Image (cartoon, rainbow, N blue to C red; front, top):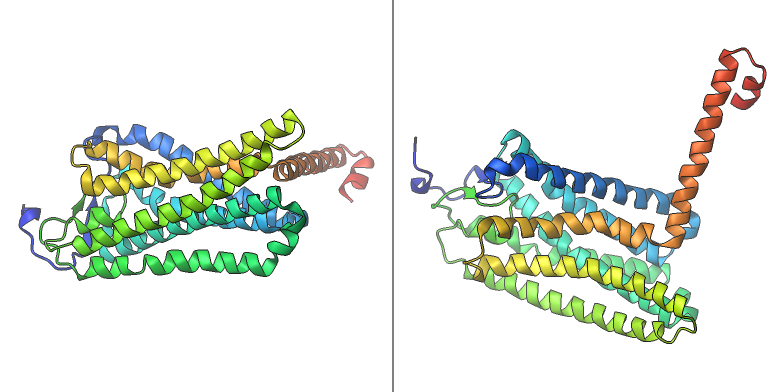
Length: 339
């Protein structure tokens, strides 16, 4: 058998994803929470998109941004989890070089888009709470469309250099990636070249965008909290504060886990590799599962529409089944129900 470390290639035909290094024996057990998280994320985000689409009263800025967040979550989780689960379940570790670059691009570009959506949602909440009379005139459909376009272009263009930089390096060390997916620095670390341009550009994006977005979010929520504490009743203050705190918790999980992963690649030589890979999966798995719950189910209009949908459709199905049963038993009332 040839030594992979001695192999010479520029662009390898495939990479080998190792999964979670050091925990290979536990892959099957680890796959259970991963799979459960993915299923909840898929069902939750598709439910959000479905309800917003069919309910005309939800066609407003807040729910447009929520729909964008749902799409972003679906792309982020689907870009990584199916391949990760195939590693855990079927030991299917190979990934084509171009497929790896595509996965890399989607993961990082949609992570930036999601950060931009958090900023847009914070701004929407700020206007709705602090200046409600001007909400409809400030966040018109045109403004929401422009914000959405800016978020998409920012994420897509800023990450565009990544696949080109990765493709240009020669890979002569190994093609084994100690990760569950093609993370940017995990891939370029395999190159036998000076990768400082990748590292510096990645650090610039991580710190600049994180500082910029977190500053806008923090500023918005500071103003929101000031407005909350000026509300006349204690119940209203507690309810609104509880909603804002849950939003901030989800946002914190996204940013803290993402920054931990970015910094560990560059400075965390003493961090156990399996712990690093697990945390790197957190910011792609946990927020897509929590966002539909925190931003969707906990929103009164969304919750009411969801309950109505289940109860109304459940009553229709029950009535239909009763009609079929009555018809089979020869009861004329069954024809009336079915008609």
